[in-house]
Image (cartoon, rainbow, N blue to C red; front, side, top):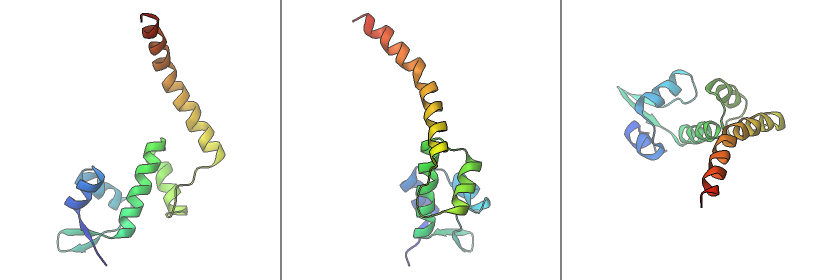
Length: 107
């Protein structure tokens, strides 16, 4: 089995060592320890990918934690969650669309 160091994880995922330690402290990833060095398995990498996907979709840390405790193989979004996130994104994008329309008026 191949393992990655925390520096390799930082390079691959663009997150700080502190973030990986936070996720480890929450039990979301469980790197192997060799002395003070953390070694991350492919399973840890897969969980990081899921965490990042959930974050990108707009889930809070607590929501991500509960989702990963139920299913750590794929991203799962219920219809209700999708509706809630879509409505939030629509609220966020509305002011930007208004600005675009005002700017286009000046073309």
